[in-house]
Image (cartoon, rainbow, N blue to C red; front, side, top):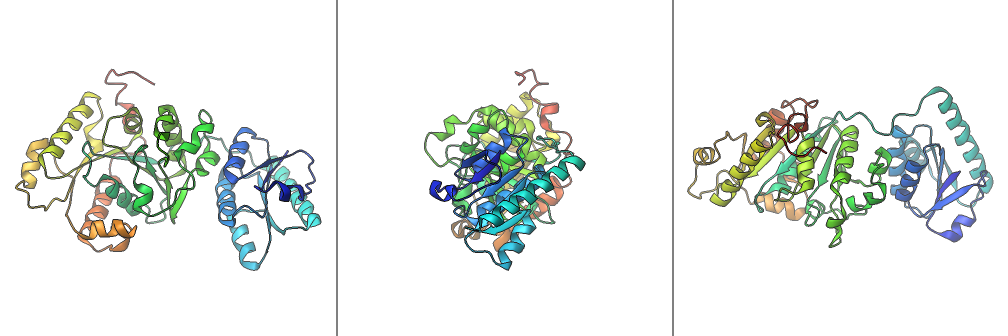
Length: 391
């Protein structure tokens, strides 16, 4: 069977493929799901009405997880720039629309290449070994700057050729997309048809590219969709993403939902954010007591004091006494932070030398890059050991 990715049914009829057993899908995400369900499939033809950026992203995501599968791209216009970029991301061939002979020959060559690869290189496992580190950012009180910190942590971690994914797990009111001013084409809700068999190809089809080395898994945008996401799907996605990235940063809502606890279980580090005001400190104290009750190790948690220099009558020592734990990072207040949010550019990018940027980068170097080993997620001695229900 050949997968033909072409949203225009009339245009699809014009593609004469050597394999008469053709299944048409409307977009690359449906193609990814079909590939997940058909591990023996070796050829995807992407028609001219699929946006080039989506087609190239699909081919780039497919290559490391299904090296034997080939992508042939059909374009209305073929030039040197197009060919160079397509070949760079792993497209086997690019043919002009309407040239059926060229298309048939490209498909034949791609299938021959696939058969040769199958004879010499075994297919990698669908579920890669989970080697990346999950970092969950949490604040039990809203308005502490949690999403802003999560975004800037992800940007700082994505330096030095590291691959990072930022997951917006605030499923009802996620702000990651609007904070960096990207329009969500796909969100976590699109993972529902994959529940129970998520693999790297399927997970990659859900992501939004933000900048080199940093991808986003965005929260749903339609009211009511949050309730449709089952906790086990979050666990599946985090496991797969952990195998695809060096770091997975999870932004959470201000509540201990089942989804949040799953992220906490899987995390190599918990970043707990607070501000120097009594309600936020009280909620942090409750959070720490809850973590102790759930037997999350204390050495994988870091408390970050945001707006640490605010003149509100509480010193850093007062904060430390209130929560009975050391402060790992002090992030100063600055009007440039909300300005960077309104611009859609994280302050770590907009002004790397700013004291806020330096505080975030220092925290990444001192706590996340040299913190608890990636091989020891919290679940190893976490809630299961604490006597709560196992999953």
